[in-house]
Amino acid sequence: MEGGKMDYQDLNFKLNFPTQKAGTFSVWGTSLIDKFGSDFEKNTDKWEYMSDRSESKDKQYMAAGGISHRYFFNNDASLKTTIAGTYSQLDGGATMFNHSLESTPYMDLNSKHTNLILTSTFNRKFSNRFTNKTGFTYNAMFYQMNLAIAPYEAESLETVSQGKGNTSLISAYNSSSVGLTERWTLNAGIYGQFLTLNNKWSVEPRIGLKWQATPKATFALAYGMYSRMEKMDVYFVKTKSTGDKSVNKELDFTKAQHVMLSFGYKISDRMNLKIEPYIQFLHDVPVMADSSYSVLNRSDFYVEDALVNKGRGRNIGIDITLERFLEKGLYYMISGSLFDSRYRGGDGVWYNTKFNRNYVINGLIGKEWMLGRNRQNILSINLKLTLQGGDRYSPIDREATMNHPDKEVQYDETKAFSKQYSPMLIGNYTVSYRINKKKVSHEFAVKGLNFTGAKEHYGHEYNVKTGKIDVSDGSTTLTNVSYKLEF
Image (cartoon, rainbow, N blue to C red; front, side, top):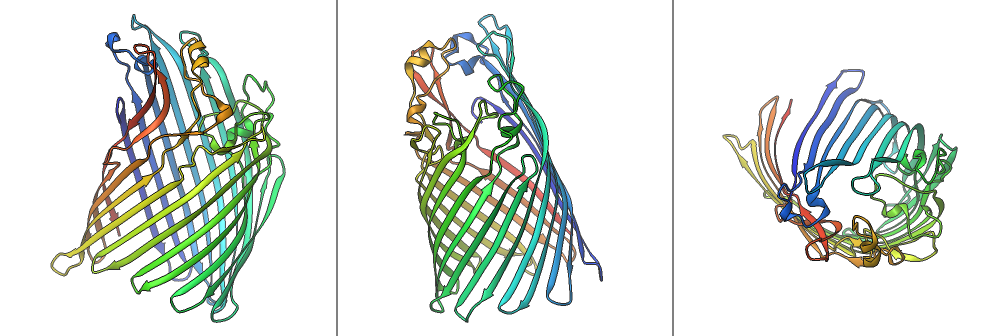
């Protein structure tokens, strides 16, 4: 991380306990502690940007764990049930320094999220041509956040967003796969969900038809309706502009209609080609009235104003994948996506979404060698490269920026996300060695993330020395050493 520091730790485990008659029980867990921040520049002569005078410290905690049980019946049926819990917490703070190196608080954040989840799925194979899956999920969610920010530098902190609440999301589904003939397969189902906070509900049909045209070629057509609730703070947050009332509690689900075509071709026993054009229409998207703001572009910690379900969105694109399966220790995959992603804000105008990169190209290659006296150990090297278009951003409003007391960069949101950053080349690698014994295996791995040094863009900053507005960016390169034990 340029100009910053990072301390990252994680732990993962999964234990399986098979029984003779009661099925298999699994206990699993994962957790991480992520500390990151940046120091201020102590030499005041080098100060160019507001960030040079800023010191930030953030801590993120995440944990998840659960117990799963899977039982196989005698009639080609199985039941899997999981009880799980997740917890996440983010504590953050920022301090500003003046030329006398005196500090004043600039931001203070505390956010906590807890989920308690019960999910169960029943699978039944009635025949070689007919299978069915039925399940449900109950998710109890708890949320708390407090965010205080100084309106301007050297002023006292003011609470700009505060919220606390809980709700439950209940979902259920039923889906079937039916072999109509030797060449035609029908997949159909229905999904429903209910939000107890405001009694909003949705029923979502989904259907797909697959045709095995030749032994090597398949065609498919699929349609599905999907919906989602927003992040918890959208419903519960109270801000200066909303007062003591949580004005967004009655928001409905964001909904989408998705249509996809698919063509698959088996080039050889080890190589497949897949082409998938698609189009997606979104409606009932929460937006801010008479504004370009939409939750589809959201990256902030909080929502400041009342929202209404009057926004729309449209995604259209094509995915192409060429995959060569593992043979003689070698595999590779090349995939590309071309797409256009747009949305309509509360002002009725269509814009690019923030994430309308237009293209993403991935290349993945790996090689394995069998080593050891009995060739039971595996040395593996994997490389992944991603070339993608840059994120979108809105044009800078220089006049509004110069009039701001802290010269904080302001943007022209009437032309939202009409500008685009430069493309990014991201490279990751993994080198691992797996030692396989009769009852236990050990795996040592080294992973390199973003070894190409691709830069993320955080926005723009005013340069007090040059009087110009510059891009604020940074590159995070991470090397991770891990050990995994399986028994």
